[in-house]
Length: 508
Image 1 (cartoon, one colour):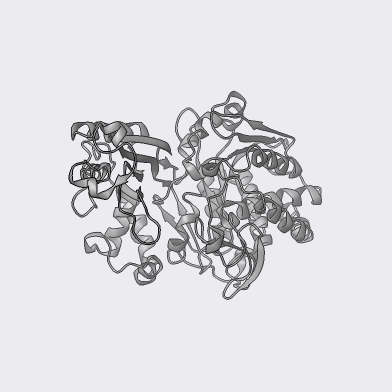
Image 2 (cartoon, one colour):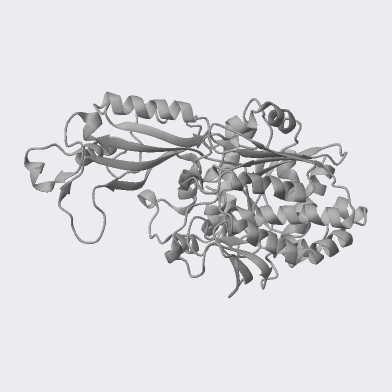
């Protein structure tokens, strides 16, 4: 997802490890008291092959919103996955965009937990992969063990399928879940969740979600040392395209023309370049949109302390190596760079497209240029505020003709450190000896604000044992059978999800 799993390289060097293999071997407190641990472990092991095949079948059906691929097949498949896992009710919920899926499982429990799934995946280029990206090939990966490599392996179908494997194990063992479940699955996460609020606020979905103690995203949150980093929120995002064209500008060509004509014809490409230059300082590191920082909330003393603690358990050198950089912005010290990462909003150019970009040259003067932009938002900014300020800035600086076509986005997400969701996650990890770092805010984004803000107003965040990386990139993978005793394999991840549900039922 953008962006929980896209932080994998950061997770590799932030946070500590397990003190032995206790986390993987010890059942949950409430689970052990009922004698259910052995039954679930046996059921998970017996269902391993079926669960992995279920994952491979799901991988073979990629829903890609940007390409309008496999709709309605994708949501229908997600609906059936929910029913097969024990949800008594599941339905495809239409939106103005791609459909969502809503499901409920009534276990007769006192508490209800929400599950957020995405059934869509990112685009891929097969030629960039070592193995076919939809095959779900299982390979031996040195240092990790047996992994499944495929588009969606870790982002997000692998962890989600492990959650489903846990539910199948409850059924097979004849055990009731300790909590009721509400599942909300979207098919547009990879394009900025433009219709997710519409899905959640559908009357039947809203009524069920508001009963939840919190919403959990199944993830693979361990680092290479076996430790975990828990985030208390995520930045918001706006995804958009800035477009300069001869048609809108009234100057320059309506279509590509010969480049020799530049001597007497204006260029929409240079027009876009000039507009982009007004958005940030000369070094690109400070946003110059008027009023951009007005509502940016400074880091609290507690947030700074959490960042310093995380830095003390990290290796700056390894993080720089993972990112392929030699300097942070302004050559900041490590702690200050991490504070900036958590606290600062950004305007980033994802890509620039204009004219001919193939081999060799093609002497044209393009009639249109596009910049793909993402803006990261921090508390107390909002998508609506930031979008309006961007438009006003362009207009003020004489670029009314430059289109700002917003394709998706949402507000920042915040979760209280003392919420039951976070305390249950910490309890599940620490009970087995895991070293847990708490991060006040991950720099990536997900549409959790739809849950954490009014009118729903419940905690939301990720949880999950296991490891994988390569989200949005070639050769994405997820560990199935771990050769590292500190990292959970697929079965241990499934048991971890079961354990978390027991913790959610037990934590006061």
